[in-house]
Structure formats: structure tokens, C-alpha cells
Image (cartoon, rainbow, N blue to C red):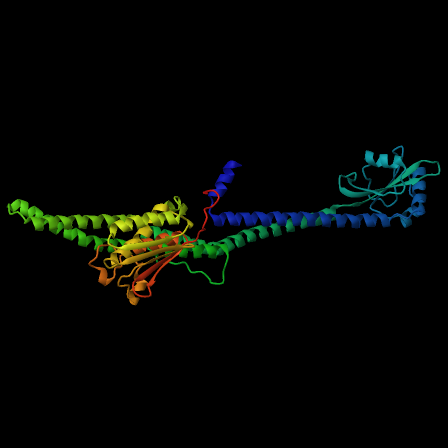
Length: 475
């Protein structure tokens, strides 16, 4: 059985569905056919028994039996009052006398003798039996009392040949109909399986096409009003390929933008290093001031490269890896840590802070990096001696600077990767800072916006869901 089950599981789905449908129909047809056959058999036997009962007529039959048992010879009343194919009288001692008109004797069984001896005159007993020649008959046994206090049995019977022939013909017809039904059910099951699995075939072909060509533009047609499992699977596949195509396009764009951004510092580094190398090779020393400027430029370009590579690594981190490090974070502590770094980078600026307790669920290092990026932008664009105002109130963090602000037509692009304002091209940076901010805040379930501040400058607003008190497990 295990081997058969394994082979069945290895069959194609169409074959399995067809076989299951055919088996279900075969079981149903077999049950109906057998039930029908037994019902017809019962009805035919009831008709035979009814015919046998009509042939016996109470007292007249008893008189016939009495005369028959007296000399085991026919009497004048026999032929007119009792007509049957088989008729015989049987005493309690087992004596058998044929009645007039009987075409033969019916084999008397021990059961018949026991019934006659029992003296049950109120019940008719029916059974299948055989005559002396071995032909099948339907037998009825009825018990009558005698004047001497004993009992005599009337055994009447009719042939079963026509009934059995009818039942055989019926069985053959039912068998043929059942066979045709099973074959038809198997064919119908195969057709239904083919029609039902056609979307699965299309999905399989699409998956194989994607695996073979890496073409993510393929789509599986789905009826809009359909909402069955196949339609949902097709929609999921289309959604998956769309997401993969979008992800691939973003990856290509990221690589192209990263290559473009890396080219500038690498070119500057190569030029400066070549000047220093040529000076050493030719023996013509560079003036000390110029040499210091070159080394300072090399150091600045290396710092910019390191920052750009760090930003790229941050953007390329998998979502699942980030989710594993999410925990309850005291946002006010993270802001204080970021403020200390911002004050070191802009010692000439005045940074004011009004920070109230707020606890959020986020990755601590990523959240601190995002806040540092926001403060770095404020420091970068603030005039010397300017002020930066930082406020955290009920989960809303605002960072307002008093710099030149951002033109209205550039605001929609500030969170795009590698996007930099034309006015800020000369300033250090990779154009990834605000993109990292947007991604980190969104992963924490919040939102971030940049807008013009009244009186000049820019205000960055970060809204993060959380609570003013830590959860019980972290308190």
C-alpha cells in the first residue's frame, strides 16, 4: 500500500484528480446499482409470494390436503380449487403427497419439517429452494391443523427461472451503465482538471520563463471579478514580479548613482596622489603650503568616501536583519546623544533643546543615525553664529534652523537617494542622509517631513508612535 500511495503521489495532478473523480463516481454508481438490484429483487419476490398466497383458499385447501393425505391420490376438488406449479402436503412425520396438477416435487428441508412441527398456523414462510430436477423455485410453507390434533404443511412453489433471468439482465445493464458512467466521469474529471489547472500551467510557464530569462515584465492574465484560489495565486505572482522588477530597478539606480557619486572623490584622490607621487619621482618638492592643502584634500576625500560607503551599507541592509534588533528606545536619550555630536560639529552654533520623555520601538543605532543626519543638515546650512532649535513633545520631534531654506520646487525631492540641491553641490555629503532618515522613520512606523519655517530657514518634523512612559517589561 505504501508503494501504491507513493506512486499515486508521483502522478501528475491531472491524473490524480481524474482518478479521484472516477473512483468517487464508481463508488456512487456501485452503491446505487447494488441498491437498485436488491430493490428490484425484493419487488419480484414480493410478486411471486403474492401469487402463491392467492392460490391458497383456507378451508378448501384443508379439504384437499385431508383427501391427499388419506390415500396420496388426487381428488375431484384438487384441479378446480388449487392450482400451482408445485404443490405437496407434508405431515409432521415427514410423509409427502403431491397435489393434483403439481408439475413436480419440491425438496423438503429440515427447516420445513421444523416449521410444520411447531404448529404455527398464523405465519407464512418463504424461502428459495429446488425441485427434484434441481431447478430453482420460490417456496411457501403454510401450516394447517388436522382433526387428530396434529398438523399438516402445504408446500407450494413457483419457478424462479424467469425472475432470475430478469435479475441477471438487470445486473448486466447496471454493470454496463456503471462502466460507462465511470469512464465518462474519468474523462469529465480529466477535462475539468485541465480547464481548472490551465492557470497553474500558465503560472508554471511564467515562473520557468522568469528563471530562464530573468524577465520580470511577464504577467499572468487574471479576470477582475474572479476571487478563487487560482486567481489569488496569479495576482500574488504578478505582485511579486512587479515588486522584484521595482527592486531590481532601484538596485540598478542605486549602483548607477553610487558609481556617479564615487567617481568625483576618487578622481580628486587620484589627481592629488599623482601630484604627490610625481613630486617625489621628479625631485621637485611641492611648496609646504600646497603640500598641506593636498594632504588636507586627500583626507577630506577619504572621509567623504568612508561616509558614502557607510551610507550605502546602511541602505543595503536587509529588512529582516533590521527587524531582529528592534527594541524599546528612549527617544529623548537618543536625541541627547545626537545633540552632543552635533555640538562638536558646529561649535560656533547655538543649539537649544527642549526634550521630553518619549519611548518608541526602533533599532537604536539606526534611529540615532537618522537624528544625527537631520541635525547635520541643520548644522551644515546654518549661518555662523546661528541657532538651531530642537523640540521633542509627545512623539513629535522638530529641528528648525535659520539657514537659507529649501526652494519649494526642490522639497518633493529631498528624500530621494543621491539627490542634492544645486546650491549644495559644493558642500560635503553624499545625498543619502535624508533618504536614510525617511527609511528609518518609516520602519519605526512614523513619518518625516521638511518644510519652510516662518521667518526663514527649514523645519524638519519627525512623528513617531510611542508612549511617554516605558512599557512594563522595560520599566
